[in-house]
Amino acid sequence: MQQKTDFLIIGSGIAGLSYALKVAEYGKVMIITKASRDETNTKYAQGGIAAVTYAPDSVEKHIADTLDAGDGLCDEKIVRLVITEGMQRIGELIGWGADFDKDASGKYDLAREGGHSEHRILHHKDSTGAEIERTLLEQITRHPNITLHTHLFALDLITQHHLGEEVTRSSGGISCYGIYALNLQTKKVETILSRISLVATGGAGQLYRTTTNPRIATGDGVAMVYRAKGTVRDMEFIQFHPTGLYHPGESPCFLISEAVRGAGAILRNHEHEDFMPRYDERGSLAPRDIVARAIDNEIKLSGGEHVYLDCSGIGSEKFLAHFPTIHRKCLSIGLDPATDFIPVAPAAHYLCGGINVNEDACTDIGHLYAAGECARTGLHGANRLASNSLLEALVFAHRAALHSSARIGSVNFRSDIPDWNAEGTTAPREMILITENRRELQALMSNYVGIVRSNTRLKRALDRLRIIYGETEALYERTIVSPALCELRNLINVSYLVVKAAMARTENRGLHYNTDLENDQLATGQ
Image (cartoon, rainbow, N blue to C red; front, side):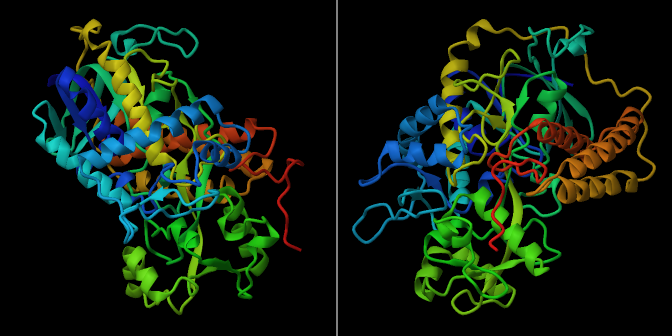
């Protein structure tokens, strides 16, 4: 079965939906998502979206904070571009109906998060992402040129490779003509042809046992582009959020927003000591890479599994007013944030690398764009500044829309695309082969490629990955495709990229910390 659309968008988060609204006047738009329409990383974003709104804040301060957090690896041109264009994009979001909290005077109630020198986080209580997702989905539903299809799993980008032509990473000249997608309701693989495609598939938190990301965050877009011979960069920079709620057995991990520390919460160790000033003069509001490593070190020193977040200084009324979702969650497990310390530990949270794109969100594959967490734009460098990601998604979706809409008329459909070939494949006999390999993959990434790494751990991870890869590829060749198998395959591809990038880096920067490298050693607090 073949379908055609002018614009194809893989993913229904902030990047995909805002792009759809901007290109819809230039042709038919199809959005596909492998789960329900709102099951995206965007929906789970608690803290907010960073933007310069009022003095004494300034664009230059926001730029300086971003560059500092990125530990010298940000592309300053991109940083300036995103921050200077960002407020206009947020204005459009507000115009579409997004509701950000205001104080009694009618001014936006700006929060502060780690690494920010000023209060500049626009938010909707502690469920900003859900508010943005709601707003964009409402707008999408009203547009006659946009269709959103749920439960369609993107398998692979269609390129010259599927026409029998040789495609290599160095040859160049690769173009995308659409995708093969598994319809999860009919169990049939559909061929979707497009003039322009946007990958907006989010992150890859499911690489790890403990993550704040939903189960859909399996790095699908990054893996597809890599297999299509596109360029992927900076994959070693996996951001761990310092304060995931420590509640064993719960997956995904519930996030305790950084805005809680911005409101006055303090991190404490098992001795109830405010330990962060030993690691950074900014204390509990240091950038995430520093805080996560410090917590990891405190956990190892104590022999425990978590530290604590002391919210007593915020006040019960203010906490309830600003963080109702977190308040409800804590009460549900028998904790009162006003009086009880909240047990927290780092959890895999954000992919700072990804599909390499230029300032217009173009990949190096023709007619293919990428935006959102799956894209590596140069904004984050070695470590993302809190709440810059939603801003980045809006700006790059807008730039992708401008660039692609101006070129849609010159791009034609290919008429010679073959349908998916499933000849010789059969249903899997034992699903345990897939589920156990996924568990093993998450264990080796958590144990060997986490917050603190070493050459020995990375080598061991690579050796194990090669075994899992071989087993999974053999299974893929003989088995009818399924979401479980394809997600495992994507996770393996992305894990390999993370490990190889980590092994290639010869200095400690931001989120990459290798104990065998001598520079930038972590203070022990002793």
